[in-house]
Amino acid sequence: DAGVTQSPTHLIKTRGQQVTLRCSPKSGHDTVSWYQQALGQGPQFIFQYYEEEERQRGNFPDRFSGHQFPNYSSELNVNALLLGDSALYLCASSQLAGAGWQPQHFGDGTRLSIL
Amino acid sequence: DQQVKQNSPSLSVQEGRISILNCDYTNSMFDYFLWYKKYPAEGPTFLISISSIKDKNEDGRFTVFLNKSAKHLSLHIVPSQPGDSAVYFCAASAEGNQFYFGTGTSLTVIP
Image 1 (cartoon, rainbow over the protein chains, first blue to last red):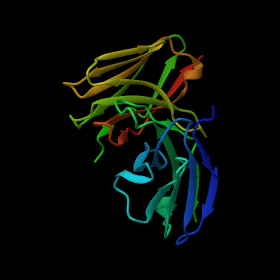
Image 2 (image 1 turned 180 degrees about the vertical axis):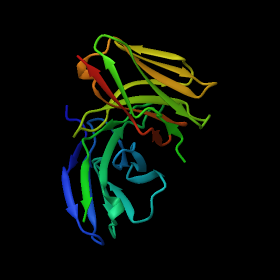
Image 3 (image 1 turned 60 degrees about the vertical axis):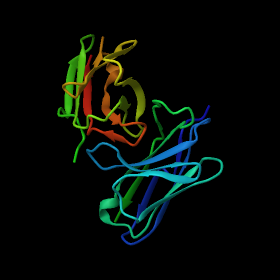
């Protein structure tokens, strides 16, 4: 049973460029959340997708956008990259249906470096 | 505004002894709390959770305690093992909404 998979593992971009990160959720999960983890910090919530719609959003600018596909996989897009966007980007999946308290399962992340 | 705080960046414990990791929060609406463990170059791994209707949850060597009046939770690891050496994050959520994470505590278990 595959867990959460993210690609690519590492990525180097320059300021002003655009980037797309990808995530496949754990089998049976229908909800995908994205987090940004800066060095020495905990993960910061970017947004969550469910049924191909953005369900919740954290305090991130519109340069951060996402998408969820019918197979529940998801993409995170960041436009006009800034040096401060350098971070580990984590994808987490969970099962919203049935609600209640559900832990999220994380992928190993994409390390994004902005030069 | 940091709603979940882990004030100890690091902790060292001898193998076999108890490790106690602490976490404080400010939002009284939080009703679900989790602990994650993170090894280098890997994503966080879910460890244990507790809902606000409980004050203790135990899973093997790991026990989480919740003190709602103090807005404080702690993770106890007994006995500590070298493989427990990792960064531990606490996280909290209100009514199934987004999770807020602390900044992590790096635990080193000395053989």
